[in-house]
Length: 268
Image (cartoon, rainbow, N blue to C red):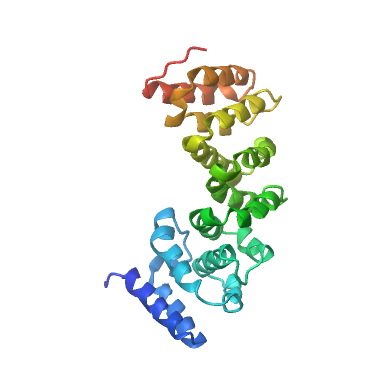
């Protein structure tokens, strides 16, 4: 069986975009179905996003939004993900894409489509924080957990310029019980802590741990990473506050073990 060369497929898309003919672009996009996981409409993992979906989105971002928008309705998640990434780039450049338009892929039923959008906004958005702020403001407050999930993927890029705003917007998520949101929240908080916001994250956890129903899973998962070893006193205080929660014993024990493997021993 011939090995699929994704670089050749990207080159075909690039050539079609350079020509600009809709038929050529359609034919080039049909070529992505030679990739087995695309043909099977399988989930795109982080590696496939980085190696194919996002580069394809960067190429398609040269097209006007009017030509891209119909792709958001495509039955293939890979096509929708590529389109989402392309629209995100055009939005950040202040071109022909409104915040409302990228809301559609931001609440796509497929997590990999949302990831393509969120990761593009994160990777490219550092130069345009003013265009990310309204998305953070509206999406983290949205009823749709999918939008909250997408927002959490890009907000760490705002750590340097808008740290206080990030913490203020994240604070209400203490009670969020959506699985994707909780996982993305851990990743976002970990990234924030690793990039100079550890004191703010710990202060946030102090508030959350004092709640009658703290989100033990999010707090303990975040505290189990390497950044936390520099704050044993603060972590001990947070974990002690969590001990009254019925679901906390196993999670606290796992966090203590993770810290111990890194040389920090806390006795509760």
